[in-house]
Length: 217
Ligand SMILES: C[S@@+](CC[C@H](N)C(=O)[O-])C[C@H]1O[C@@H](n2cnc3c(N)ncnc32)[C@H](O)[C@@H]1O
Image (cartoon, rainbow, N blue to C red; front, side, top):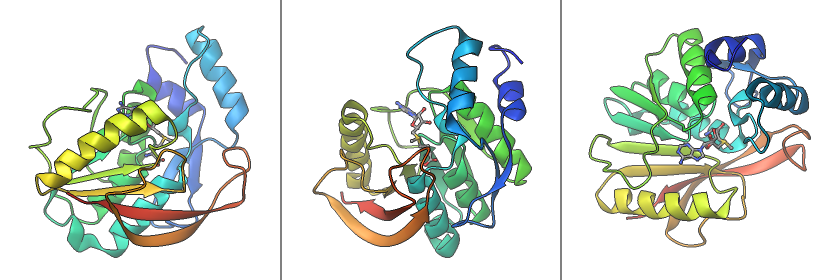
């Protein structure tokens, strides 16, 4: 297990798990938050690291995945970007739904490793990148999906501005969000809501009402 080998780290600290809202997809996930977080900190010998978001399927990503599997026409034959992809649940759903290509972007290299492992486990082709794409051209994609990114104000502000620009250029832009504080109050259209089962380790409730929003251009 080594910092230079995120793939081994992910594999050794997760196990295949089902996600109730999306039974079609099995993911390598952690059972508990705290041990893996500590392990990551020990591994990296640093403090102030971000939590291992990649070790869980967050409510926003689950909702997006459910919506795409139920509405495959939205991504069929399309070039899809899953921004802030974490474990890759939404990216995998997009690929399953028939996307022409899927890029999963997450700045955390452990997330990229988790997504690659999960894509392979679910037998779908997904490319990963750790490049920070915020503010970059969105010309390469027809559809941009992003799950659970409005939990921190600076990130939410930067990303939602960039996503609004992409929507104005005619991209289909979808956000899965379980009522996070920094979700914009305007410029979104509600598409569907799900009651997503969560764990008390991650959330302050057992079920999160989670909405898929379309960003208006
Ligand atoms: C709460 S997790 C959500 C992961 C996944 N979308 C889901 O719903 O399960 C947020 C993710 O955003 C990623 N992230 C934060 N800033 C980012 C950026 N500038 N570019 C790409 N990913 C970013 C984090 O590394 C983390 O994996």
